[in-house]
Length: 319
Image (cartoon, rainbow, N blue to C red; front, side, top):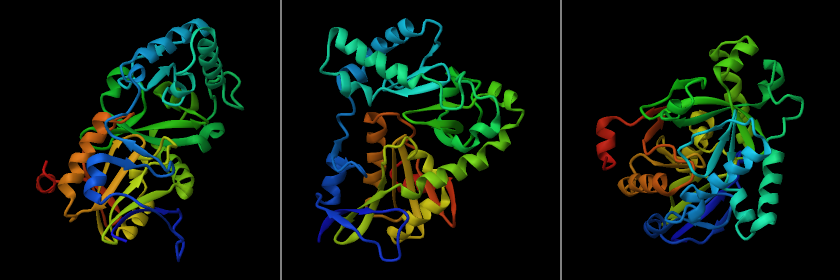
């Protein structure tokens, strides 16, 4: 087999069973589209959203309905038109838009209202929608890597620095949504920020046991791994050394170059790959055109640790 994409289940068994999906050569693969893990479909980088979603018109429509359904709701600005932030919650619109795209009038409005009402309902065990004790929410903690610019809009987010362009934030996971942890929440829980990261990473690691990735092969040699499960935490898996070690083993390398151009895509390739400059350019393309943009920074994983590329390493990748 000269080229292909292999579905590699997680955790990787001693003798993994693999399903092979035909694909173009890796050069055509990079030039045209990315095969997202778990979807079985090609997502072309040039078409990230439908127009009404990408230009913000759909979000404006949803915002008007939010105000009608819940007049006291606070709608916060967000740089990504594919989501809307209502109070403490971030709600993805990329799932809602396809459901209502063919509807109009009353049917469309009712469908949007129904979706919003379900998502804005308090989580089980939190009748007020405002968790009061840390122990009741600890098992739902996760990490999220987000652009630093988010702090301009929401300075109360609990966070720490991760890289030049990214910060680590903490969220409470729920079906179809997540809630960012803020300083006032820490005060109510009577804990400090240092108490969040360990359980958040443990929870994400547990949730990642079934997180799949795909390998792209060229001449039977693995050249690229893609993590795109659609569970909202693919970029955050950059913080899971064990998970990255499994990818490195699959790519048969001790040193990975990594990128998270969007929230829902982690890319990894051998640091000495002949395609490294093409891959680095693909990262920029995915960040420009994909939903939930994160960063075009490149990272190195070796000896169990992640770090940004050095100046010399960036130059080696055409940066």
